[in-house]
Image 1 (cartoon, rainbow, N blue to C red):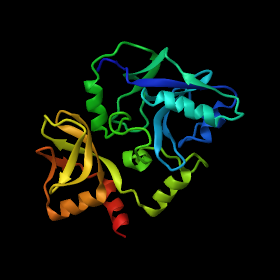
Image 2: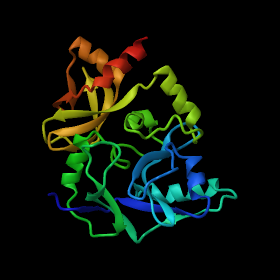
Image 3: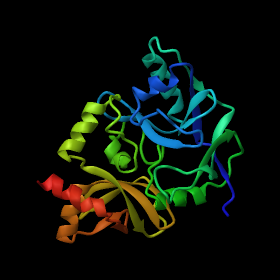
Image 4: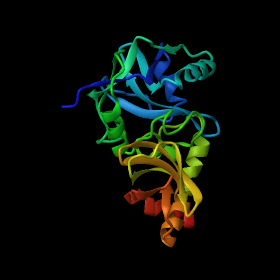
Length: 267
C-alpha cells in the first residue's frame, strides 16, 4: 500500500452559510446539490468567455462546501467568488488549517486510475513523485503544472470527458461558450498522454516536422501529458511526419474518443 503524501501545492477554499449550495450551484460547472458526505465532485469556475479560472474538487463538510484547488489559484478564486456573491448568505475564505493528501480518503471522480484523496489537517510536504506518475498515467492535467488561470477552455484539459461539466444542471458562468463548443464539436485542443525518452523537461514544445502542434506540460520518467491541436496531430500522423519534443521522439496515446472528434472537425 502506498504511503499517503501531502500536496503542499493545493489549498482549501471554504464556502459556508445558508446559501452556500445554491450559490455555488449557480456558477460552477458541476452540480453541488445532493452531495453525499464522502463524495468528491470535479468542476471549475469559468470566465464568461469560457476559460478556466480554477478547476476544483468539491467536498461537503458539516458546515461548508470545501474546494480543493491549486494554491496559486486560491487567492484570486476567493476574490472572484466574493465579488459574485452579491446578497447571497455565504462566507468565503481560504482555510490555512486544511490541506490535501493523496493515497487515502475518497475516490477521485475523474478516473478510477487516479489516487484517492482526502481533505484534512495540513501536513508536511513529502515526495510527490509517485502521485505525479499516477495522475499522468490517469491522464489528469493539474493546474499550475499543465495549465494556468484563464489559459484554457475546459475541453483543452478534457474536463468534459471526466465529468467536470454538467450540461444538464442549468446555468453556470461560461455555459454558453462551453455548450456551443460541445454542440458544434469544435474542440481543437485536447490533453493526451505521451511516451518519450527520459531527460526531457516540461514545458517543451512538441513539433511535427519542425512546426509546433502542442506543448509537453508534465513528465514523469518516460510518460507525460501534452496539450495538442488534435487536427494538426492527425495531419502529421497521416503524413508520417516525425513528432518531437526537444530532440526526442514523442508517441501519442490515441484514446477511443479521438477518432470521433477528428471526424467532427473534418465534417
